[in-house]
Image (cartoon, rainbow, N blue to C red; front, top):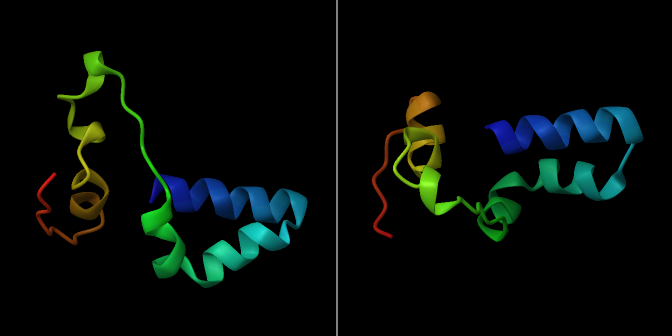
Length: 64
């Protein structure tokens, strides 16, 4: 959800057509993004792929 919020803010401030397309087709584009986490942070809840889903109430476990 943090990524989506950042893209929404970018589109609002810049009028980015690419950003608007990403938001319009969010389910298609989301899997194309990667999250890099430094080794020192890999055990934090925020680094988990399930963290955003849990925060949004969509708990779905995925294997790494």
